[in-house]
Image (cartoon, rainbow, N blue to C red; front, side, top):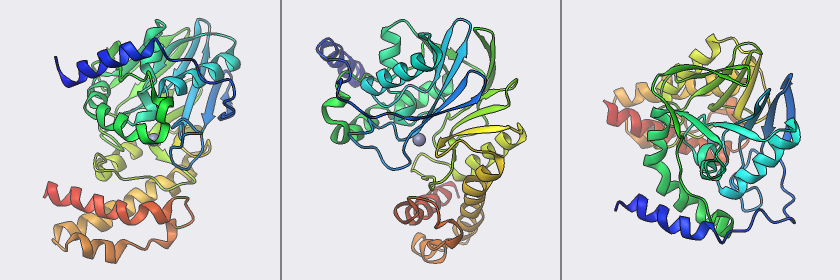
Length: 314
Ligand SMILES: [Zn+2]
């Protein structure tokens, strides 16, 4: 028995004992209809907290003739229930499909709740494989924050795994495309694109209003390439992974320009073997981006981690 399957069987026992989200829970996401029957659920731009269920990110709901599509399933079983309630309230229909845009905890750890109800969970195979690699570390990271609210959360990946990088689905009469462009915030991150509406659910490819985070798993250089491929779709509306519903100009300013700053600056220093301390000394102040929330907490670490990544790739 693998560590993961042992862990899952423990959870299966625990799951039967879990009550639904407490009635006193007042957390809710902001909502905006971005095209007819297409909704963005906009979470807070700060960190994960007990009160926000780790839903410090954006999600999507698409109304179709045969039920609702939920874009991303939340960071926990309880978070999944909150998203389900929002989707049903907005569409008057049950959630029939879930699509995962990525690998960070809030993109997929609610999958198990939906799979348990017979909802079809859809992801690219490469996304699901990267989720499996990150599952235990993500649950360990969430436990001290969500405490008992994480109970019953099982790391379950998609039952419908799509092998390609670019897939087109007809879900209840809606044309829904899934595009993997390159490894970005995490390996396997994708964009969900509605070509008829011109709406891109960009997942963690795009952060606005707040600074993006370059994690050890992030590849800033290929993330920038993926961002440029998203731009080439010419979306009318972008639902970013984090921050307010936006357009290309704002996404370029808050994500594209920052990634370009990191890649051009840090890569040159890594090629010169300048050292990580020198990279942080030279690039650790970026006044252009200091208007973004979380800048003070994240920027210097972003330079540090991007440098180490470039250095190891040399
Ligand atoms: Zn995220």
